Every structure is written in C-alpha cells, then in structure tokens.
Amino acid sequence: MNIILVIFDSLRKDCVGAYGSPPWGKVHTPHFDAFAEQSLLLTRAYPESLPTLPARRAIYTGRRVYPFHNADFRLKGDFVGAPGWGPIPEEQPTLAEILREAGYRTGLIADLYHMFKPSKNFWRGFDQWMFLRGQETDPARSGPRLTQEEIDHWLPEEMRGQGQARIDFIQQCIMNIHDRRREEDYFAPRVLKEAACWLEENRDAGKFFLTVESFDPHEPWLVPPHYREMYLTAEGQEQVVSAYGDVSDLDEALLTRTRANYSGEVTMCDRWFGYFMESLRVLGLLDNTLVILASDHGHSIGDRNYLGKRGYPSTPEVFDLPLMIRFPQAEHAGETSDMFVQFHDITATILERAKVEPSVETDGIPFLEDASAGKTGPRNHATVAWGSAITVITGKWWFNCKVDGTGVLLHDLEARDPFAVNVADEHPDVVNELFAQAEADAGGRFPDWLVDLAKNQADAPGCSDLVARVQTKEAP
Image (cartoon, rainbow, N blue to C red; front, top):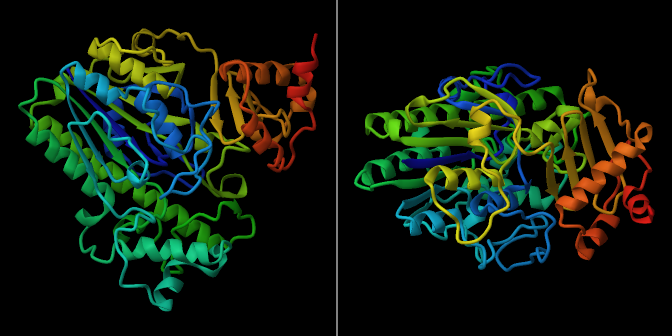
C-alpha cells in the first residue's frame, strides 16, 4: 500500500465545504468536497503544538514537542518564531526515515521555506526532496525592488503598523513573484503539479510514501484575479497581509477584500488538489493508496475582531482543523468520526497501516480502527501548546491560559455562543482540573524558561484572575 500525506498551511476547517462555511459565506471547494465524500472525516482533530514548525515536527516524528524542553531556539539564518521553532532533534527518527528503512520510496515536495532555512532538517529520510522557492520572505530574489507606487498598491496604510518590517515583508514577497504570467506559475499549482510528476516518475516503486506541503493558503494571499473575483468583483485597495492585532476599526472594504483573497486562495488550492488526485487516478495508483489531507492551523480573518493567528487567546478557527482520510478503494467513504485526534497521532496511524514498527517509541496513538468503527477512541481531550500558553479541549470545555497559570479563559462549548463569555470564575474546580491535565500532558512540569516567558506575557482581555498553577501546587 502507498501512502500520501498532503498538508495545506493555514487552511481553515470551515472553509472546506464538507465541514461548513465561514462567517463571511461559502467558499467553493468542489474537489475537497469530492474527496470528503470518498473519505473518513475527523471532526475533532487538533494539532499538538503550534505554529508552523512545531506542528510539523510533531507530525514528522510522532513525538510531542510540548512542553518545549530544550526548545528555546535562536539559530542563525532564522527568526525566533516561537518556542519549539527549530530543527528535528537528531535522536528522533522521522517518519520518512522509518518508512524508507522498511522499503518505502520516500518523497517530499514542498514550498514551505521555513523547513529549508539554515539549521533546519525536515527533509531527513526522503529519497527525493524538492524545495520550490519564493514563498513569503524566502530570499529567492534580490531585485528589482518595488517602486513606491507598487508598495502603495500592495500594502494599505492601515496595515503598516509594524513600520519598515512590514514594508520589507511585502517588498520580498512581490519581488519573488515578478515573473508570474499564468495560474500555473503560482505556488499551490507548482507544488501539486510537481507532486503529480513525482508520482509519474516513481510508478516503478513497490510502495511509496509521499509528503506534499503547500504553504498556500497561508498569507500573503496573492492569487490570480479570477479567483478573488469569485468572491468580490469590486475594484479597490489591495489587501493581502495580516494585522496580527485588533481590526475592529479597520475599513470594512479592506476586511472584505482580505476575505475574498483568502477564499480565492483556498479555491485555487482546491482546484490543484483535484488535479493531483486525478493524476493519481490516471496513473492507476488511486485504489492502492492511502491519502491523508490535513492542515497545520487556521487563521482568524476578522473573527472576534482579530486578523492573524495566535495561541492566546486560542479559538476554533485557528485550532480546530480539517482531517480527511481516503482509504484504498474508498473504503469507509462518507463516514464521520468525532473522536479526539491529535496530529502526532497521524504518524502512529501511518506506521500501523504500513505494518511498520518504529525503532523508538512514539507518543501518538493509532486511530483509524476506532474511528472507522465509530468508537470514541482513547483520548477524552486534546492539549495544544503555542508559545507560553496551553489549550485543553474536552467535549464540554475550551480552556486556555499561560503556563504559569495566569490569564485564565474557560468557555462552555455547549453554550449558544461559547466564546462570548469567560466562565472561569464560575468553575474554579474545572479550571484547576484542566490545568492539571495540561501539566500532566507536559510530563509533570513546564521548563523554567517557558514559565518566565509566560510571566512577561500580557494577560488576554477579559481573562480570569484565577491562578491555577498556584492553587494546584498548594493543594495538599
């Protein structure tokens, strides 16, 4: 059996039609939806740690990255992205290494430049890895520089809160794409076309494991105009970046443009995913291949007046993720599972389906047997870490606070509008119980440097003054 793992960065669950629609209206995803009809859908899938690199490290190794022990990375050639933003530890074998040793031919097709920066090693174990350059601030080009008129076109005055850094960002992004002429020149089409070529070139493999990493629909949302026009035909100021802050005072036209560009990029990803799946069928590989489609995180686009992504306060549009699995011959087509799954479980699941024993123990739990049988599975919660904040999600509660126990947010998922009110003060026992669960999932303690980081982080607006860490530590 062959195995394919496809990850789209920043793909919101509610922007995949099989899961629903975002607050601003339906996003067209006919190919994702067709794939969903042939797949097992997971409705409670969550990352293990965030953002980009910690999320992938957990998927690529099946090991927890949380609580970020020895993970205060400050490496040359990269910025300090977040705790855990670093390479895969040498002592942790990767999924690709394990499968290659078991006789699989392994391939990685990606434009996610963070994985290929100096000091990174996410290509370990792949017989072939291809890095398609130019996303975001990848220094793929050094000229020609943008004119002031071009900067003004791409970057509204309202989005220049970070000063020169934001101008430099858009400068590099647009320099990298000066030669685009056709839709096929855009990033998602390039990634998925190259992935299809890999399939064609490796048909002689007895069995293969292919990982496809599309940085789209991550910002900047630079799409062919015909995709944006599917959602907004009016002309106006272009807007393709995030504020990473409150946008309650942002011109509604700019927010509408942002949502149209994001929606258009999702639809472009959908179209080329359809191309990839059709290539799989034409090559005669569809019915003996397990295909997993996932995202690493979502993105807030005006939700709760925020534009960007963050781990504190955490919200479903960023943490609640799509996960669809198409079995060979579309077994379990159209079935749905609401069991709790975390993304380091994907590794364990792939190894189980491949009938390969890892050389070292993983932290993930295989889930396909339980999910396809309609069982609840072994997990009764999910714990997700981002920076100095942790989130614990159960069937009833969404708990979020800093690792020093301050700035507590508790939301009742059974309420009509769960995130409208923080109910932590009303349920101190629940707060302490869920904080203790987060601490237990961290192996019993958080590293001192992470606690110190939390102390220097501002509390979220509207949080509780409960200090769960102190209470649990002082309990007899």
